[in-house]
Amino acid sequence: MKRLILFCLVGAFVMTSAVVSAQEKAPLGKGNFALKLDYIAFTDDYFDEPGNEDDGLYIGLEGYGEITPNWYLGGEIGSAINIDFGGGEEITFVPIEVNLKYAKETARNLVVDFGAGLSYSYVELEYCPSFLLILRTSGEKRDDWLFGGQVFADLTYKIGFLSIGVNGKYQITEDFEDEGVDLSNYRLGVQLGIVF
Image 1: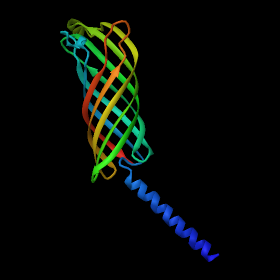
Image 2 (image 1 turned 90 degrees about the vertical axis):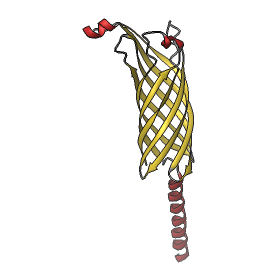
Image 3 (image 1 turned 180 degrees about the vertical axis):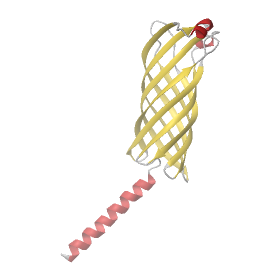
């Protein structure tokens, strides 16, 4: 009986040590969340025309959970807007993403990750001449939902349970309905998050 109790205690100790060790080695924890603030630029030539702004600000929230060592499954939702006070085409862009990424700790508390995923994005284009901005009325609006995909990379520094980092992403989308406008874009920015 004493041998059985001793065997169970040793087994429990070994298993607990293995679990704690695995948790410590997870580069971005068992899960993580981050708030992102990015510069976004749309790549279609349509936005090179006068009055069509091709860049703006993107704010997003992402969350991931570890599915196997170093591999994380998660998603991101955000909103981008470009406001041209001189009048022209305004874009509201809301991507909803599902992503898979691989993370590796390259130095103490410094994690590099890269991945890819699929997206479904809501887009609203509104032409607003400059005189309508003064009157606070809106111009012609068009909206659509677009399928797409993205590739990305992040560099994250962990400080206890907090994380700060930089990120880059390139996203392709299908064309906007009946207009042949491509909303493919790239994003560069910073992020602040938690790791647990």
